[in-house]
Image (cartoon, rainbow, N blue to C red; front, side, top):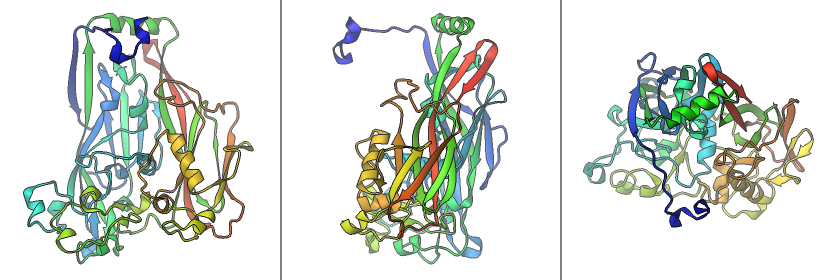
Length: 463
């Protein structure tokens, strides 16, 4: 009866005895500086009760200029260098990882009002990379020498570790957990022209690709201990019952294609929860400077633009994106702030699975797609500050199939496509004369997977 009252009104108390908490650093299997397309590997402890969501990758990263000073190298968001994270259980693949994880991370960050902590996660690109000191606000100039191009980062280990439930996992019931992190290419480093540090030169393209180097990488893990005996008895009882223990987690697949008015992917997931699609202009992986956010103040000059403020948009008024993470509507129709005629000429999209349409009407990029995007992610506001910014720099669409708050309630309720390799088609319909036909489209399929653990450290992954 007492459980029916809100927490704020209830005097109900749960008591756990002999609880302890400790944090550890896990070193990689092989250390040493890593460059683009490198990889690092870690093994989690085999006899620990870990809080998986608290697992963080700590590392330092430095940017290198183009050869012979042909471009300035500037670091982008921390997550942008992660191409894929795979997790194995004693040689059995729990999650092989999603290619283009950096693109997925940007798509997910676009749905947040406040993205990661600028102190250690660096979810945005900044021209000034030094920390806050008194000198920053007085006499320090914004000269990007080598000492100013090394940053320290702390980032989570992706959807599996952030979403798996239960999130506190006794690793003694699992085979050895091996994590392999694959790094992305150098295109994730801003390569802007040399000769100065003003806004105009930061966004101008350099003449050769800049590089990056990752060092001092390690995992920070949080371990718990509950020594009352009851927890271990419950776990062992379930393992001995034959039913095993089930953990659910969110997994992604990605497909990249040229969007010549249509793209087709396939899935046989037992619970397809969401489809996400983003578009990028051709040449997104070339030598590029930074991308200034649409309708942001970028005209500050003199000390306002150099010495008196940090470069975070909250301090200065300007903001930047990486070109590989800039999502743009796949049309040549010009978009201006408040241009209703241009908005009405945006492509209409049709999404279908085995000829069944989702939604039941042709969705137009713009207000219709933006509202459905927020509903798919169950948010009231996104990182966009205008409809023009959504279409020009954060253009993505999504459709949700599972129940609201399904992950929080550990519900497997997505579209069941088992038994058939279902065809998923995303196409532009109606008038397509203004479409680019060369845009890159990346489609992400979000699904719920089940990790079933049996006695003797036997594991089964149900996709």
